[in-house]
Image 1 (cartoon, rainbow, N blue to C red):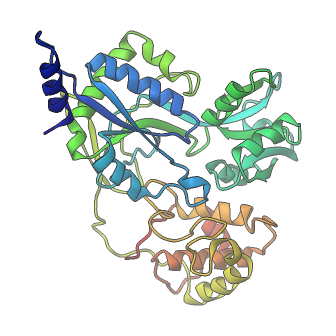
Image 2 (tube, rainbow, N blue to C red):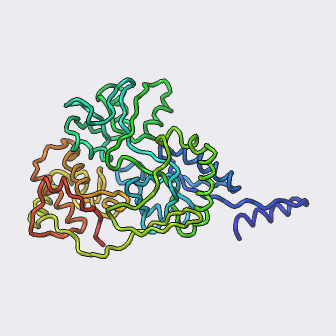
Image 3 (spheres, rainbow, N blue to C red):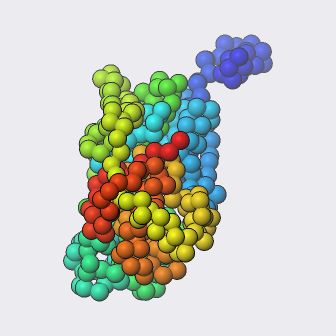
Length: 397
C-alpha cells in the first residue's frame, strides 16, 4: 500500500465529508553541501505547486563528507533508484552533455560555470587581457587549472579551497580569481557588507555547465512532469527569477552530443526528455601512448613525489584517487592533456611545477598504465601529453 493511499484512507476515517484525492509525492534529492542548493529547493517547490504534488526532499552530502574523493558516481545511481525520482542540480559540461551510464537527464533548467572575478572597476574581460606576470587565484584540482598553460601571461596561485581563493582576492593577494559562480554568490549572500566584484563569464574549455535533473527509468513520468513545469516557468518569466543569482544570465544551452565518447541519444518528442546512455566501445583497441620503461620510471617518481598524498596504490589519502571509475570517468570529460596539465602545474602539492618535464611525462605514463592503457613502442613526450585529445577513461575491471 502506497503512502498516498494510506493518507486517503486515514482522512476518510476521520472526516465524514468527502475529501479530495491526495496529491502524489514529488520526491527529489538535493545536495545540501552545494552552494546553489537554495536554488534547487526553490525550483522543486515551484514544480510541485504547478504539478499539484506533495514535495518530499531528500538531502545528501555531495562533497563526500569533505574529503577530496568527492561523491562516488555510483551513489547517484543509488539515489535515483531508491531515494528519489529526480536528483536536482547535476552539472553537465555544456559542450559534452553526457549523463551517467544507466541514468537519464532532463533538459537543462539553468546554466552555471566558472567565472573571472576581479575587484569592482577592473576592466580585463579575459585571461589574455592581463599584463604578463599577473597573479590569478585558482582552487586546487578545479577545471580552471587547465587554463594557465594557454595563458602564460598569468601566474596560478593555487589554494586548497574555493573559500581560500575568494579570501586571496578580498585581501588583494591576487589580482583576479577563477571561481565557480555559485560559490562566489554564496559568499556575497553571507557577506552582505563585503567587497563587491566584477564578474565575467569565461569562454575557456569546460567552463560552462548545464544544470539538469537526473533520473532512473522508474522516474521517467516524473521527469516529464518536471520538464513541463519548467517550460511553464520559463514562459511566464518565473524561471529566470528562481535560478538567479546563482545561474549565469541567459537561457541554458540546447543539449546535443558532440565529439569525444560515443553516445546514443533518444528524444521523446512529446515530453522532450533526453535519454543519454553510454555506448560500449565498438573498437576495443586502446591507444598505446607510452612505453613500459616510462611507466616503470613513473612508478618510482610517483612513489617519491606523489604517494604520500595519493597512496602507493593511487586510491587516495589526503589527495584524491588517481585511478578508477571515479577518477577517469565519463562525467569528468577529461582528456589526457587535461589531466597532464593539472599534474604538471599543480603537483606536487607542496611544490607545484618543480619536477622535470621527463619526470612529469613518466608519472603520466604510470597513471595511464594504472587506468588500463597498454604500453607501446613509442614514448610519450611532454609536448605530446600537453596536446593529447585521447579521452582518459578507466578501463580496468
